[in-house]
Image (tube, rainbow, N blue to C red; front, side, top):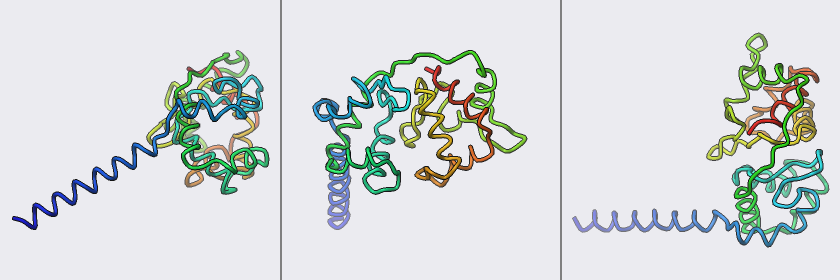
Length: 205
């Protein structure tokens, strides 16, 4: 009985320690707000970039932001500007910045009418003829993504940025997707189809 009690006590201590570590690792949005001044020059106030080629970070899930920053730091995702910007960030800085942007609301400008039907068809249904999965499987019907899985929120993102990333996955210039999922999805899609999807996503909210 004593051994069982000691084991149970030890187990509870380890569990509580793990929970404490999780809390520390979650980041602070208020602390993050004070750390994003340089980020705003490219990503806009509150993470709503006004430059179509730069992504909106507002409303993005923290897990995804953390992964991208760490990939820039490690070189798994290549971008000289971003690598230089995040190189000196501590793990806590990264957690705080991610928490801040995740707490912000993304501004949605809306999609263009041209190609909207094709974009909607591909986003919601994929293309069974060439075994292309629907985007909703990972990014949700409303484009909010899947935060626990770290799949990014796409809704309201600039179409120019989304299109550039889709093309980068297709060409292999970007390869930091888990298990090559994005590269597999876009490798057989045409420019017209990618443009339609990117446009449709820009209007999702």
